Image (tube, rainbow, N blue to C red):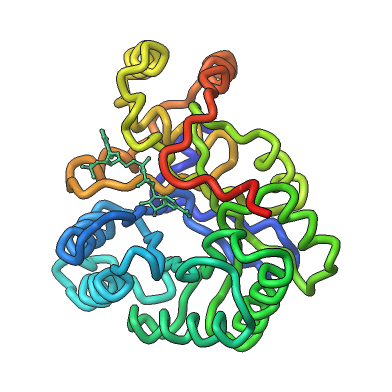
Length: 293
Ligand SMILES: NC(=O)c1ccc[n+]([C@@H]2O[C@H](COP(=O)([O-])OP(=O)(O)OC[C@H]3O[C@@H](n4cnc5c(N)ncnc54)[C@H](OP(=O)(O)O)[C@@H]3O)[C@@H](O)[C@H]2O)c1
């Protein structure tokens, strides 16, 4: 892997044949816990820094702010100097909470599209496996139909454990989720889930890729940041990319947004990747639905 293979402009192929050669940007800006004002400013800063993907959710209550900031940025020729269009930006949203019934999911997707004002959603995720087996399978069928009807480009899941994915595979769906978005960072490597996803051609999106800034001063992180002349956040983003994950670093600071995406100038050596893998302590920074019944 060439050291410069992951710039903000990199798009990765989605491995499933069913996804019609669609691609996904390598790094997304996460916008969880951002107020309206913060989300608008962060999206604008991210797009100006070269990000092409924003990760929102119904639960974050900032789909409207993100969508408007994207549209405004695209329409402002002093910012959008490359003349990018809607299709050059990748917008993700997620179902409000639990998996549920068919009509609720379909209506909820249509509501998200209306709220963000972007015409369609690139990636829509079932936010969690909560709700039980029947709700998961029905909700997934609703996502598949929304893709078939052109409302969303790609369907995926979030916080699904191996058990939930196996259950979906066993139900013989028309397509598998293209993405499983889970908490992954060196302090919670979730190898069982990531290996299962990668074996099935499901892209792992890494949420909380910076471990919510809880381990920035860890001695191994500090030592390797010095070695690679990068920040702890850049080291963790790079670790994620080198594992083949799609990291979603969040920041409200323009400077940190820009820096978090600048990871093309170094490559973590194999032994150092292993050292970082060894930091696993099952650190959960938010909720942890992967074992939900
Ligand atoms: N699907 C799910 O269930 C789920 C759950 C959680 C998160 N997510 C997604 O994943 C995204 C990222 O996760 P996250 O927001 O929980 O955590 P994160 O990205 O790991 O960490 C964000 C924290 O790190 C700080 N930070 C950012 N850059 C930094 C830097 N260079 N140096 C020091 N501190 C820095 C941020 O503060 P500042 O903002 O002040 O910079 C913030 O406190 C979310 O925004 C969301 O889109 C999804």
